[in-house]
Length: 261
Image 1: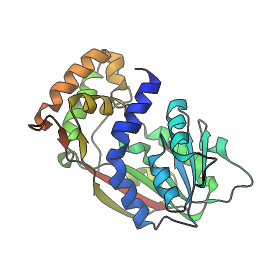
Image 2: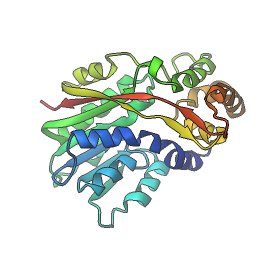
Image 3: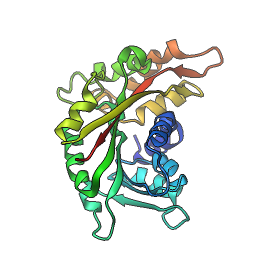
């Protein structure tokens, strides 16, 4: 899939599904003037935009050129918002001796539930030295499978990817996933919560494009092809189609707030 088109699908279709999660976290942590936020794998920047609009100083780091270009369109580093965007493989590459420590670090990438905790461990290890003592670190992920309608659809990704042993693909969330990541990073858990984040799409085509843009179907596409993935994904979405053609899947996401010691 064309990287630019996929990034646009993420920005225009899928990213907004996580709006309730971002708003809940920002409200709980009272994000606003005085907040210095570091967004890891910031994507096309919706969460950063919400924080910056509240008066926070935001820095987003991402290695994906296409996603970061869309974030720049939204945040306009030369505009009135206090926003900085850095293309880098590691947050350590974005370090600046003149930049004060961050008071909030967000790692929403785990929302994808890719079974790749080692990658997140490395990212946090590089980011935490940039944070102030006591700074909040937010991790997020899928809620219990039985409360996430999209889990049944994402099982298609895992099934199709089976020929590629060890591929990064979706797996059901475990109860202590986020806590385990935090403890390995040396963080102190300091509260958690659940947020309803329903996935709603104008039609089946939009749903397929949005879900594929998450990256959760990459291994499935590699093991089969884009056409086969689209066909099986369309079939799996059938139970969630409404009479008017829209697609609606209730989901619950979980977030963990941890503190830098």
